[in-house]
Length: 201
Image 1 (cartoon, one colour):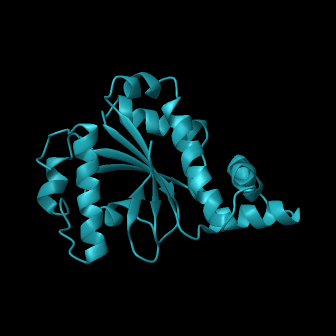
Image 2 (cartoon, one colour):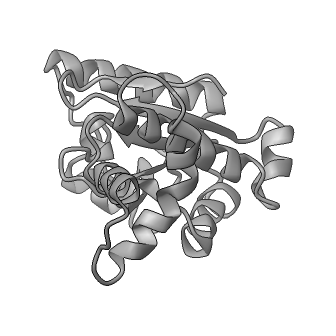
């Protein structure tokens, strides 16, 4: 990506896909990870995407997409649970920094989702603020509960879809999406393969 150039949503997606392909293949370029790049973006930034992902240490977006300094806005919470503060951060990326792509990325064997599923299945209690994480995941749990297959994985996918839908309907983001200035996509990351699968919008 040329310095100072902001792509459209489709081109931003292509760069993320190509970066992920390099990660999967073990052929990383490590772009924009130099002192020169640090200096170049010190006075201003033009990220190509906002990535809202899980805090899991095995899912670092800059590495998963083989990007560098100034390339991504990254927002991370447990199982990409959403609230007003997170929503504001994503709005900032799209509105103020003009990131053309927003990616909501969940992942395989998510620990926060596993905790929520086990807690809600068994009616057990969790300590402190983990209650808020479980309650934030309850809508995804309820959406996934009647589905066949792996309950945790189904809940991860439901959480991705629900969160992406929330962002598409956000009062500030919705006009940008309707005007094709911003695209919001869900994505699922495989811990085993390193592959990111983008979900239909």
